[in-house]
Length: 259
Image (cartoon, rainbow, N blue to C red; front, top):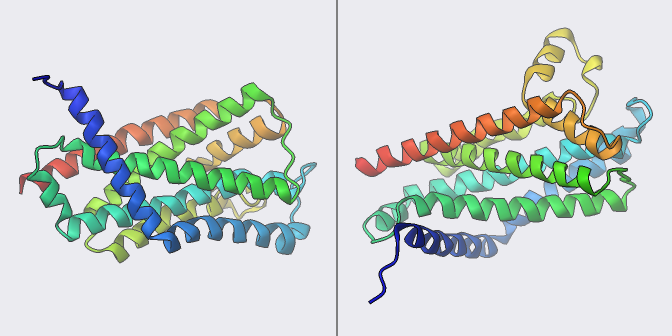
């Protein structure tokens, strides 16, 4: 009889959990469509209602806006992940998985992979809609690959952070509420308006928080085809948050499993 290695168990069990999470997403289409629809509606609102009043230099406002909308979209997907993890925890499904002969880490990695797929789909749809209303990046293939890399890092970081929110929250509503803080951060950055136009205290916060260098780096790559001084801080923020969130999520999950 062929004996599977520990890695083989992990890969197979993670795949099973991933399929389960994707099936749950398909059965909960209203949340999935909300995650897509809200950023699209916000983009249309800002471009067609407020865009004419915005002074963003030589860029068209839709070109300026897209990076911030993408990050806001990823934040919206993070809320779905937090709620999904919390529902599994509160309804006892996670306890059932612990009693089964499966890799314990596959429960979280299944959620994480499903969240990444949802993020990729919604981001692609946001970019398609943005192009339809006038978004015209000048980035070449290499610059697009760098942008994709930054976005994947950010998606992974926010996914594991959302898993933490789901694990520590007492209810799905609470998980959604905590996740809303992350969804709100792009508004307090350079995503929708230049930081120079903000009051001093808000400007300092906007320039120091992680969303601004990530947005500025993506914007420079897409619209100027260059890596500016924000690239390294953007990558460091994404990697730092990802490592801290992954370690935190695994630690919290193990503590809950030990109770």
